[in-house]
Length: 84
Image (cartoon, rainbow, N blue to C red; front, side, top):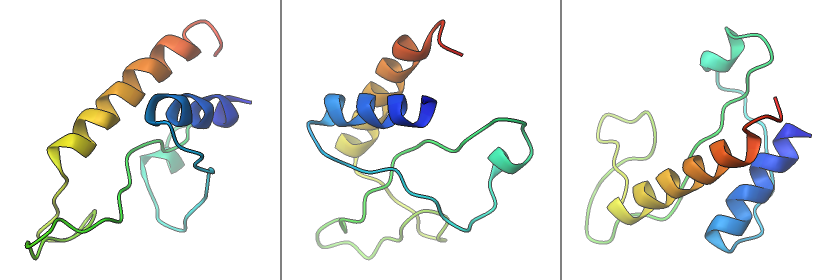
């Protein structure tokens, strides 16, 4: 239920219809009981730049995507407060 809640908050905040997904990477979530990884992911390249995605030596994110992430986190914290 918490995953559905987090995805719903993200979709409402961003006006999108994103779906949750799992990946094979090892994150901090493996070390914390009942944890899950939740964060921004944008596959759109930054125009004119040769910048990498997450965990690359030249990792970059647009300021607008970063601000969207902050809005999503803020709304998610408000939504799950008292639900955990």
